[in-house]
Amino acid sequence: MNQFGQESPQPLMLTAEQQRAVEKEETPKRNLKGFWLYMMRAVAIVMALFHIYTAGTGAWVLQNTIHFFFSLMLILITYPPRQKSQTRDKVHLGDILLMLLSMSGNIYYMLNINRILYDLGWLSPTTLDLFFGSIMIVVVLETARRTVGLVLPIIAVMALFYAYFGPYFPGKWVHSGFSLKDIIASLYLGELGIYGAIMRVSANVIAIFVIFGGLLVQTGGGDVFIRLAYALTGRLTGGPPKVAVISSMLFGMISGSTAANVATTGVFTIPLMKSKGYKPHFAGAVEAAASCGGQIMPPIMGAAAFIMADILGISYFKIAAAALIPAILYYLGCWMAVQFEAKRLGIPADPQAGKIPLREMLAGSHTLFIPLILLIVLLVLMYTPTTCAFWSFIAALILYLLSQRNKRDLGKALQKVLKALEAGAYTAAFVASMAGVVQFVVAVVGMTGLAVKFSAVIIAISGQSLIIALILGMIVTIILGMGVPTVAAYILGVSVVAGAFINVGVELMSAHLFIFYYGVLAGVTPPVALGAYVGSAIAGAHWLRTAFTACRIGFAGFLVPFMFVYNPLLLGKGPILWVLIAFLTACIGVIALAGAMIGYLIKPANILER
Image (cartoon, rainbow, N blue to C red; front, top):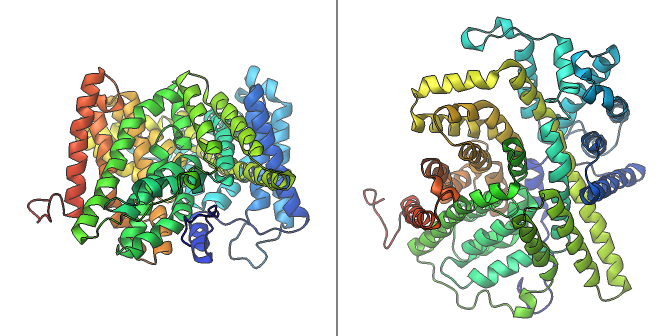
């Protein structure tokens, strides 16, 4: 019986090879046993319950600090200091010491919160302030190193180096410099420090969304999406790749990770594509390109979109509404690329594929679609993202538990709910570790005026030319996004190039969406291309060839940001008729681009025709 036979579909599981591929993209956690396993789970579940409670009742004054307290504890228990150590699966004395230090730093901040926030304690730090601030700087750098590798900590240390040695830099880069006291106080106590705006969004918005997403995944949301995509597209020309495009787009909204998306949906779609005659590198590339775009597709976009809403001071709904047409254009490009590839290779449609009984196709879908519909309705009604995610989580939880037939099934369901809470807490802690270290860069940019200096350099190189400034911004953002998650890529990109875009006349939201898109696309852009690496491992193809092919398939994504900068109608800004005309003309352009990349439109195309 195939994957979609008459019996209830089984959850998609990763093979050992696929799991290793994901672990190479996402730093592997410890395989704990005994006391520390229970401790890890307890911390994760308590952290998740805290965020669910505060999402429903309102954020606490200490929300950011408690969030970071749990996150650091969870990371230090979960992630080993060295991946290749023979004792990596054991919690050592050094880990315990770091836990105690992180606890002391967070608790000290909590106890002094009134003096710090309301009496401007960061302007006149005490000796204890500087002591615990120094501790937290070390802990934040170490936890970031464990979770996301060396790239972000190195960038953060370089930023601190620039803040201290400012007088010794040449030309436009010179500044008066800051003492260690000022730097520590700013990072630990200041508004731009580790408990600043990015941590606030991580604690108040992102945490509840990833917990909600974890529940949807654990309760079979990924399987529902794949069954639906297979039923809708399996019989079309280019069926298997189109299954990958649709399922990855849908699953990407609830997974939040390109690599996890590739591995989860790719375990079915990549072998299916290969069995129909598609080359391994193409199969891996389709999955990578489609999975990468999940973060730009409303209604649940990547975590960076929530940070964008906070930075711009507008509702998340406006961000999602503006991002809808560009996201559709991106996936239209992917869809047409696989259509043209199927035509070019002469692979016919399979009329027998995708024939899934309606009852089986919709099995368990109510626990997925009703909460998602509720989420969209609440967003349209302009409730806060936190409130929307909270009530959607509650709806999903109630529907899932009520769908169980007996006490035995209910017991298993409760175990899955606990796993969902754990998974959500792990992801929230991962984001918090990034937020903490990226705030170092944000603080230094604010202290030194570095953004203004970068803006001046980009404007000088571009000669006030919009197209050159955009190309430079694209290159810088992709470079900053290599090897780091999208949240970090977006924040670093905004810190460096957003000011230049504004100065050459780019509208504010367009500038931020432009940076966000290229932060996402860095996941399939060589030479790093982490999402493509996972797809190539599953497909058994060369990773670099897979990455370049993924860029060809998603090539529209590299041009769509230029399109909406030059034509804001593509962000829905203007009369509906003109928005529709702009959308239709953009669709024609995207289809032509896809044909040029593949070498086929109505018939095989030569170089001149392409």
